[in-house]
Image 1 (spheres, protein in one colour):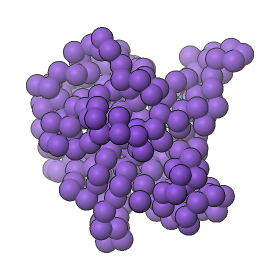
Image 2: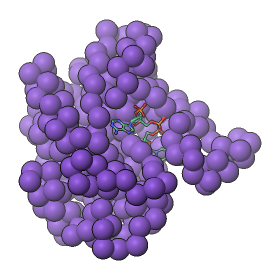
Image 3: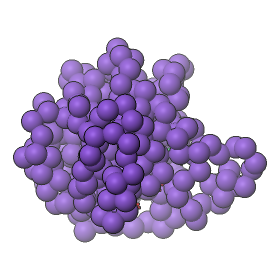
Length: 262
Ligand SMILES: NC(=O)c1ccc[n+]([C@@H]2O[C@H](COP(=O)([O-])OP(=O)(O)OC[C@H]3O[C@@H](n4cnc5c(N)ncnc54)[C@H](OP(=O)(O)O)[C@@H]3O)[C@@H](O)[C@H]2O)c1
């Protein structure tokens, strides 16, 4: 079984690579830092891991990654869309999108869409921040609305949940999850994250965050509950409509398709 994990160079992705490898998956580690990816691949306990370099800040790079994956593997058992970033300042990529929306939503959309029928299941690392998302499908980069780092991040994680809904509507076994508050290199200059990390016992180790990813990648719940957002290993109840509304999910699909296929 081939499992492709993005953001595998650190944190939750690296821990998920170790766990899926232990379970016998042939893991393809995707990230920006080839040296770190190779180090992690070298430490896997299962089948030999492979490494592919890709910077999600470039949609051209994502297209190249998708072609490489399609050339190498006839079928991909699991695509784990895990790479993610938080940025204190509003940065615009060379593609003209706000950085977080590109790395956290547009790039995984483009990758998943390009691999289409070759993937058996998709697992996306969302976040509890999705509950606060107020995305506007016509203004994903918040060019016309107030920009704030956590608000934009929330929009992108809301987009992960809605993308999962839209994928499931198209027959893909897609789920997403909140990993918990995890001690990783995520958002190192965010005050909130520093407070979480400074609270004894609050932030959990990367292996904890990787557990739901490995669960949804291997357990039948990852198929049975297609379209759902999980809190850890449990399908979440009472989510806001902003994360579950099928019409909004379709409108987001169309605007994302337009943004990634100019
Ligand atoms: N930690 C938490 O408490 C927490 C809570 C909820 C959700 N999450 C989500 O969990 C996921 C994994 O984050 P983490 O906590 O494991 O943080 P992390 O240690 O910072 O890992 C993030 C991963 O994403 C990759 N990435 C960042 N920007 C990228 C880009 N432009 N192109 C390609 N890859 C890029 C990083 O690669 P580099 O090593 O090259 O930077 C790294 O491998 C993210 O989606 C995050 O939003 C985390």
